[in-house]
Amino acid sequence: MNVESPVRVEDKLYHNRYLVDIGHPHVKVRAHTTPSPQLLALLKACPARCYELNDNGQVEITVDGCIECGTCRVIAEPTGDIEWSHPRGGYGVQFKFG
Amino acid sequence: MIEERFDAIVVGAGMAGNAAALTMAKRGMKVLQLERGEYPGSKNVQGAILYADMMEKLVPEFREEAPLERHLIEQRFWMMDDRSHVGMHYRSDDFNEERPNRYTIIRAQFDKWFSSKVREAGATLLCETTVTELVRDERERIVGVRTDRRDGEIHADVVVLAEGVNGLLGTRAGLRARPRPDNVALAVKEMHFLPRETIEARFNLRGDEGVVIEAVGTISRGMTGMGFIYANKECISLGIGCLVADFQRTSQTPYGLLDQFKSHPSVAPLIAGSEVKEYSAHLIPEGGYKSIPQLYGEGWVVVGDAAQLNNAIHREGSNLAMTSGRIAAEAIGLVKSRGEPMSAANLSIYKKMLDDSFVIKDLKKYKDLPPLMHTQSQNFFLTYPQLISKAMQNFVRVDGTPKAEKEKATLKSFVKARSWAGLFGDACRFARAWR
Image 1 (cartoon, chains in turn blue, brown):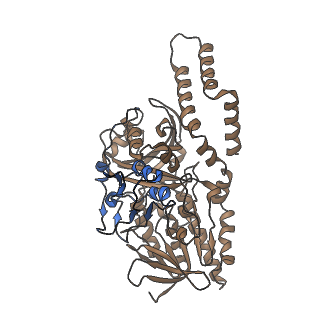
Image 2: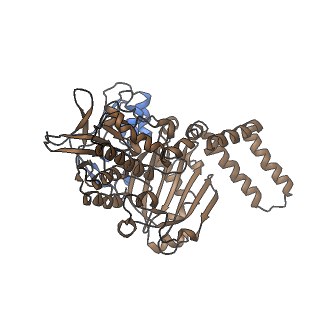
Image 3: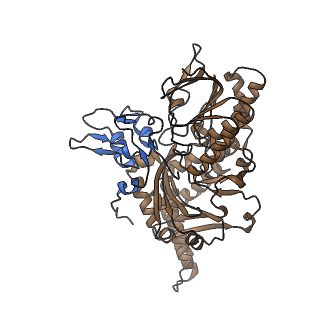
């Protein structure tokens, strides 16, 4: 049980229905050279794994799979590391069951 | 700006928002409800259990109309370690009653129905509309909202903030603080579909009988958290939640935790062969009484999860949301019937009425438990479950060791892990917080 098996989050998100607002991401990461501890925490804490480290060691976000829980807002908005808004009306994840 | 003026604007079409909008519309008030999702329920996530008593107060005939899953006849609590669970089950035929007390529901479906009742009562619902800002007058009173629609400013006498745990409006306007990582849990959930007969056989159910399992222990890897398994008609809601601060501290992943919970030997057979049709996540208010913000002000009230109204110990949230929404609406109705303005002084009656209800009384009773659980998470969620599992195994395994020696070994393992002072202190602290 202690061996961490790789979980493919994309396979989980695949079941969900989204209306992606192309060109209008509702969460943005502030430009940085070295990521803060809060930003680094998002790599693991985001349940949709929207946050990834790029080749330069900076944290980037792709919001397409976001399930709008707000975890990243609670962790990284106070430090100004991210800007968080709700998607525009009608966009984003649309739960069939919730 | 939309010229039409409303008695009240309700932001959000979840349990609290629907309860508030319905109650005001029934009183003949002119209500506008705004929802950012494609339909009511499309952004809402819950286990979910519906509490009949609070629902009856809003829609007395809901049992005949609402999309309900199973009425609960059994509750199981599990304390888990990696290979076992110690369980306490309560099952009673008393719950097979004419008007059952609790049901499992599927929120997206239930909320759609609930919203239809709100509209029948006369409220106007606008979906696919995100409220971006509260509008103030020159005296700083809230007089309406701004939305992301064109000409999106709308005015009303009062704004009911039913915007959920992650609501931005109230925090942006400085009416309350943003939830802190140690005051909210992140829960992730999957919907597992199986044939109805399979679910009934695996959970020992007949017809529409239902069961819920709630589990703590090593499944949360030392974090403050809980797993849940709820039987619906043709699917199982399965999930796990832990404090956001603990996720931040431990670098555990929510999906890793979920998959480990699913593969636990006590859980895996329940969902074997299922088809997963959705993966969701949501925050849950966990701060309890001490985290409740200011509940009213000049031209506004806040209800439900947005006001952190959630009883983490009894895992009750939606009923507190419904009740706070209804009470806020009744308070607003009272102020309006007197022909008085929606000032903070007049709206303070909402808090008085809520203080007198089970909502605040229950949260007050457990006011010290969340901090205790959060600071002692290693002990309550890792050490004790492991010790209790070992004690149980020692009790039931027959291997020729004299019983007196077995009991001594069990006691020794507890003292070794927590010391006499630690055990005594934990018991006292727990009892004091529960009282």
